[in-house]
Amino acid sequence: MEYKFQRGDRLVLELINSDEILEGEFVDGSKDRVTLINITSYRCNNVIKGPYTYYRSDISNVRVLSDSSNNESIIDINKIHDKSYNCDAILIAKAEYQRLREMSCNYVYMGSLDSRYYDAVNYIKTCESIGIATITTSYEKTACFNLLVISTWDQVYIIDFLVINSEKFPLGLKEVFECDYIKKILHDARLLVEILTKRFNIHLKNIFDTKVADIAIRKKNGEVPQQTRSLAECLVHYFNFPVTLFGSQTIKLEKWKARPLTDFRKFKAAQMATFLIMLKNHFEGILLKDFYKAVDDYSKSLCHCSMKDVAAKLFDAEVCDTLQNMKLE
Image (cartoon, rainbow, N blue to C red; front, side):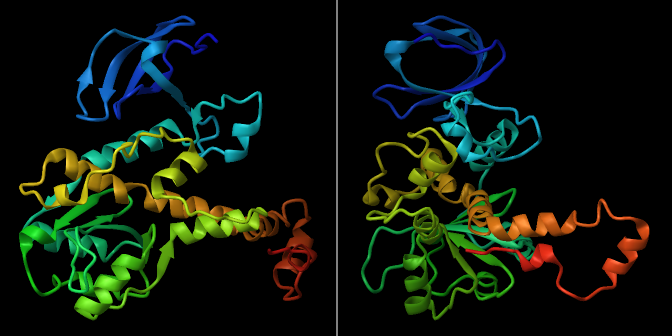
């Protein structure tokens, strides 16, 4: 099968027998090769001007970053089953995909409770939703996390508990975690809840668990799930992300103890929280699809009315047919 791309398409290549992912601009190709320029390596975030040619024997998968024509940040997953649609496209607009990838590279690492930490906490307190990921190397009763990773819509913070080496939980974050008004998004909240409760007597509130949401969606679609999906598997399933984005080989737990923490491991830690807010928003859209459809219908229900009817309907408290017929599953 020939690679059918247009000049200027932004492609994401996964290489065979490697966790290496390359992103570049397509300039030429045939049934056996693709030639790219302005190539970014996901492993080191370096940009290579090129051109470089990659052959089919070296490529395990090719995906296209799409410019959404209607400015949607997320493309409908159902389109992946439409034969007229490029099923190798990443189902998120190119600008949003690149924004998130850059965000995971531009993390703020904190190994002390200095002014950067308190500035970060003050900013986090203003956020409606935050993503949280934890890394620990022990599951004993007295265990704490080595790293706590927090993402906002536009920034990722890595707090290195192993370096801070404090018996007390850092000031400010307790208030954030116990706040009812900030939604905490995790993929499997159990470990964080256990550590916070047993070790620090902190009670995490307003949790959205994307692992639970994925199961709920699968059950809503008539599936009887037997296995849960990892965060990486959810990103592959719902957005057609590269399979090796998180790496096919997980970093061994004991290696997370090594300090100083390498830039590569900081990047891998940042990735664990970067996509959580986007994933939560997508899951809410699916779980509340009928509700949002009713809201859309209701908001447009006066568009074809005369001004006299508009005034009458606006001051009529009776539940209209649009809301009476709302179906919520």
